[in-house]
Image (cartoon, each protein chain N blue to C red):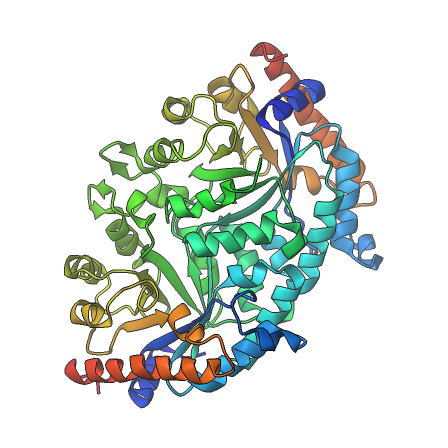
Length: 277
Length: 277
C-alpha cells in the first residue's frame, strides 16, 4: 500500500504514471481463455504480468465483477491477491452512502478478514457528503478517490451547475479537500480543458488526480499533462479498454504491453518536460 | 415485480406503505442464529415471514452483504429468492457510473442469469448524470430510485447548494423526472420539512418517494405524511434497524412484527386521512 511518497518514488522509477483499468468483461476476452477454470482471473493475471513494470496502479472496475455474482467476486478476490504490492491498487466502486453503511463498504473493500479484499484505495461518489468519505480514513494508510469531474456524457447534467462558489465540481473539491490531506485523498478528474484543471488546482494544488478518459474515451495525454501535471507529477492517468482489449487473439497480453509501453513512453517525455524526472 | 398500479393496489390491500430495510449485520443478529449454516439468511427469512403481510416492500442494503464477501453475496441471493413476489423488492446499492459500467451494474442486480439476482428496483446516485440511470430502464418494468434529498448528516454538504434553479436536490429531481415517468422512477427523499416536500413535489407531483429515516434515524411518520402523501399514497416509508433489531433475543421475529404492525397501524390512519383508502 504505497504512501504518497512511495507513489511518487514509483512514478520516478518506472517513469510512468499509468493506471491499467481492469474492466474485464468475459464476453470480450479472447475465447481461448474460456477453457480456464477462471477465465477472468487468467486474463487479468496475464495482463498484470505483461504491464507491471510499465504502470504504477491497477484499477479493477467493481461492476464488471459484480455482474457475474459469486463467480465474479471470486475472480476479483484472486485478481486482488495477484496485484503487485508496489502499485496503488484501486477498486473503482464509486460507492457513496451514510456513515453506518460506509462502514460496511469499508469492510467490503479494505478489510480482508471480513470480505477477502483489501484494496489500497476506493473511488467514492460525493452526493451524500462527508459521511460517504470519512469512515474509509479510519483504515491506516488507505486512500479515498472522490469523484470531482467525470468524463462521461452525463457529467454535464449536474457537475457544471453554477453555485455561489463556482461549478458544483469545484464546490465538491473545495469542501472535500478539508476532509483529508493530499496524503489520503485524490480526485477523479476527467478534464481536458485548461480552465477545468485551473479550477480544480485552486483547491487541490498538490492532490493527485486520477484521470480517466485517455485512450478509448478519446482524451489526450498531452492536454492532460499541459494543464494538470505538478512538480510531484500529481497525476495518475487511467487507460482500460485501449490496453486490455488491444488484441482479441493469442497475443492479447503482448498487444496490451505494447499499448501500455506506448503510453509509458509518452508519460516519460511529459515527466521530463515537467522536471519530475 | 409490481407495476405502479400493482404497488398502489398492494398499499390499499395491506393498508400499509412500509418498506422493511434488511440492513442485516451478522454482529447484531441474535447469537443463537449463528448455529445456522447461513445465519444472515435465516435471520432475514424469519423477519420476512413475520412482516410480509404488513409491508409492501423490502430493501436489502447491499453494503451489509458485500462486507462479508462471497458468503455475504450468497446470503443476499438466498434472501432475494425468498422475497415475496407481490412486494417491491429494492436493492439499496446507490450505484452511479458511466454508461458501459451501468450496463454491468444492471446485470449485477437485474439479470438473474448473469449474477443470480433480479431485484425490482435499485437505488442510484445522481452525480454522474443520465448515463447512471438510463441503462436500468432497458429492463422491462424495473425501477430506478434516484437519490434526491438524503437524511444523513452529510446531506448538507452538497444537496442544499444553491443553484440558479434552486437547491441542488431540486435540480436533480427536476432533470431526472425528464428521464423516466412515475411508472419507472422514484426518488429517495429523507425530508421532514414541508418546504422540502413542496420543492420536490413541484417537479415530481406523482412520483413515489422512498423515505428513509423513520424509526432509528428519528424522523416522524406524521410529518412525512402531512407534506408528502398524495391521492395514490405516493410514499414508501422505510424502517430498518427499529424493526429488525427490535429484540436481540429468541423473540426477535415477533418483536419485529410488533414494531412493523405499529407502523402499519399509523400508516392505515394516514391513508384514511388522505382518502387513499
